[in-house]
View 1: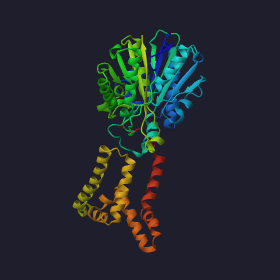
View 2: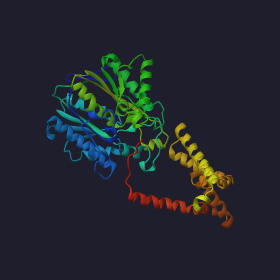
View 3: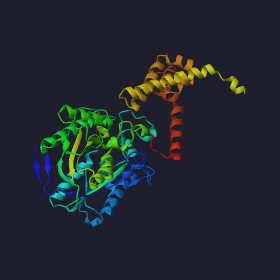
View 4: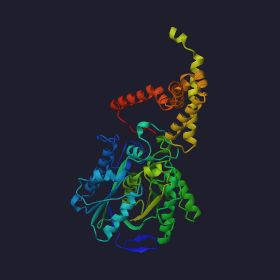
Length: 334
Length: 128
């Protein structure tokens, strides 16, 4: 691997995405992407006593599922990189404590999925590992409780609010395999434009996505038209529009091949999800469920995956801090 | 039949319109500002306490009955009313005692029924 441009790594022996798996909750199962997921849950608790326990179970089962689908044994997996939104990443910590795989807890808010894939692919390419798992999870109920209000309060959601996706997505990156391959990664910088509204994450994260997107094009010399699809994580309807407009004003027209997983996940009118989906699981499940299969079936050949994260916590919000955004891009090609 | 005949329909209408108007103000604040619901609740209680303290809220209660006492502004007005009455009885210390005393029934009932509800019901995801 070698570095190109300002902040992009180009892989000489690109790691292959061997397999992907996804499990989602009931709301996601009612959405337009439902048929692509491996498993749809019937209720948010999945037989557990708390939403936090349910989220841990979701990521645990997703990791088990991706290993089973790949026909590898758990002992063939060298490391797992995983993260979620709950304090100190307890969903991943508790969910994977019995997995017996060396574990890295990763936090990049909703950018964690591509962040862990960035780190994982460097491990694989550098021969530090043969196979690694990258996984993330989120849960609407546990996220609302931690970041906004307990659901028991019955608070109304404002129109710009997004809906945290319940579910988990996991991929196996491998030295062997027939692709799709991770060819380039562009880890992002923290960008803070001073947005303070926790109910408008799309606007807070869009500038970070723009920064990473433009840097990626500058570093690689590629144009937006190089990709069949440019996919952001969870900017939602509000952030998606902002990003497309800002990119246009900087001379990059992404209108024809750009979409956002938060927009794809739910039917805005029928499901009343306001500004769309969000959460670590948003891009993880939509990529693992939909885009991975599109690449495998060769319906798409090159995609740029940009997960976006809002780097705040409930204390920083209470103290009136702004919301710094981050975005990590990986290009996946066959 | 006697019960239905005894209902003051005009009073019900006044009650509905007043209570409804207070709720509409809350809804507009929720939709048009960035205020969180918790802040709106606090604004309502303090507004009620100020209006109650100035004696203005009592006119609304006389006019609309439960339409003015049930919304959170009524709770605020009740706090102020209790504090003022208590000051008259026992002096300045009443300012700290009276408000909570006057609303003790509401507070204790909220805790009691909240606890009972938490035993009987399981939290669920919201539909929208």
